[in-house]
Length: 116
Image 1: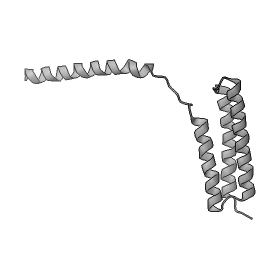
Image 2 (image 1 turned 180 degrees about the horizontal axis):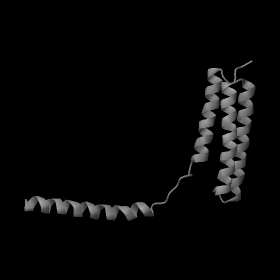
Image 3 (image 1 turned 45 degrees about the vertical axis):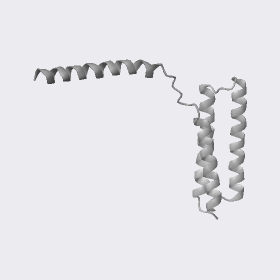
Image 4 (image 1 turned 120 degrees about the vertical axis):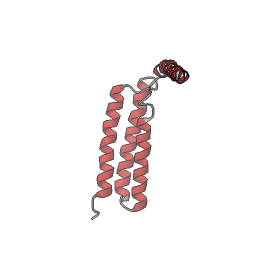
């Protein structure tokens, strides 16, 4: 009985020490929430446009217009990054996400509106 209580106590102590050692290392790691979000969204929207063309849901005119809007967003992103030494600040990310949201809605509408 005493041996099992001693074992449980040692197990609890060792797990507490392990957790206390692991916590500071995780807290000191840099958090990169927005590292590739803009680029991932642009890639995904390009994939959606290509899928719409392949399935016949997007006409060549609609796809061309959407591609042109994506190109302008990319140009704007390059200018924003050049102005900030290769990085995007919070306001830049908000502006780009707003524009990407608008293009995303256009892709959805163009793909789901009944073709005339």
